[in-house]
Image 1 (spheres, rainbow, N blue to C red):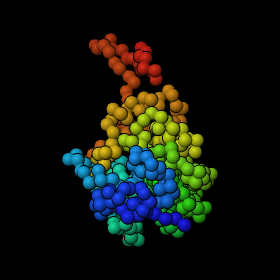
Image 2: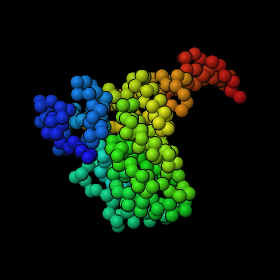
Image 3: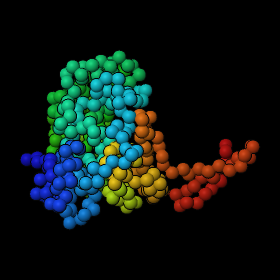
Length: 350
């Protein structure tokens, strides 16, 4: 039976927080949603005060400290939301936010002010109908990204209805689903759910959120295999987190394990400026050095793109290290390219 920890008392009972931390954690839980499924709770080493799984999912008093630069809507969803459930930031794709519920609530979530059981659950039938009409009316929309919340907390019946509606829109060629469910609650990835999200004649991509190699348990790997075996390409989205994956060995292990599970590393996200998350963010220079540590030492299959979401709704930009330098001027410009060992080599302009 699936069990989920949802409050400070349960965290204390499971020895995931100390009794002395309970009052502060109750304050955190009063503001931000808490849910920790048994599949993830079992991975936490309670003897390790810096356990990387606990840092992601167990509430901490530091979440009560908000920095001046932190924002309730750090990536600017609202600025690009023409109607409920839709975010149309980029020309050829939209987000369709089906629910505000997640199987697990990450302590660094950029939508932490809008997700949780005390927020509206799924889109109403009327709101979903209007959202689908918007997609039908905009022929430039090539891809629809189901997000939330986590779409895979919904029933197979509801998911099947949405997927069929999207599959019937001629100009929508790709559907992508952003989810943590295969890792947070792998038993939900049943054959019925897999059938519900697989489209005929159009690809369904699954973008899985995973931040540490230990999250890919045998159960999670089996859930991912059920999706991959059904013909759905799997991508990995990772958030760079202090004390979780901000070391070269931890990040390299995660990328390799993903590829071994047929999950292609896609994005390494710099931590967003969500309120109460400063203790989990790194600086950009750290991320760039980590990306350098991967280049040339790990297969190209293991290389994500390091990106930041520019506050205010301006979208993602790559912020990885630069390997190209230019010298000279007035027609004598030259370039040098740095290899993965740090050596620079002249390269002709043409």
